[in-house]
Image 1 (tube, rainbow, N blue to C red):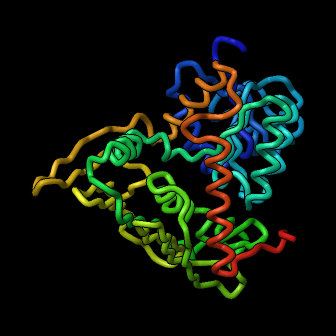
Image 2: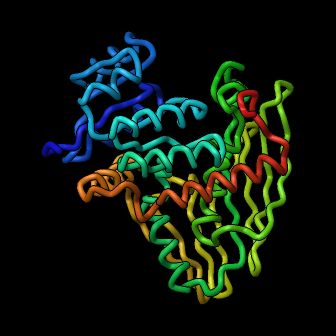
Length: 327
């Protein structure tokens, strides 16, 4: 591997541009290539970020030998196929969440990683957020006592998007659950693990897209109340409550730059400013794993992605959410 880790961008859209803005802040990384199904889009992206190698197909990038790792930022329904192809070419993969549309897809991705001894991680960037890492540490250390209650939501108004958009087109795995519901579900899983029971209900668009979902995750001694939606905004604050105190992540909690501890009738706010917009920390993790020849991260492992996809599947099953391409 060269001095700098060579990154390839697969799907040069809005999310990829946000990601690249943070990738440029990482000293030991460079953007070596970009691929799109439209060569024109790839070339425009390459010109914008001074990228040397440009490809009008994903396969051409995977077979080019120009990159050590790719960031896959296409719509959800393409994640599995593109991840597997990259891994089969011994290229590391950071795949935008959700890693697969369902658990069966994630199993294929994980198997491809193991069979080809190639790195694979879901881009659950909030796992590497300094404030969220600190909150997990405090919970694990028992600072707020026994954890009893979590509330987390993630919503924005998305009904003004076109019916062919990834948010509203069922053929692109549309809806709130996979796109943003994954964040509250992730937080409950991170702090409390796998629930004993899930209760959930959804509202739908006339084209079948799930638009808003309320969830209760029931644990032996705790509960989480979770919500995602595309029909309105929500506060997007996270509350983590235990027998001896509370922790708060301010809006928008999934990209927090501070946390608040309420304990013994005292409220203390702790600032943890972000480098970039938050993707920076997952990029550092990927680079470190690649340099250590790992095929998964210890902080967000293959098993973590399998568990998260199982939870997403269970919520969708409870609510009757499926996509036309699923058999």
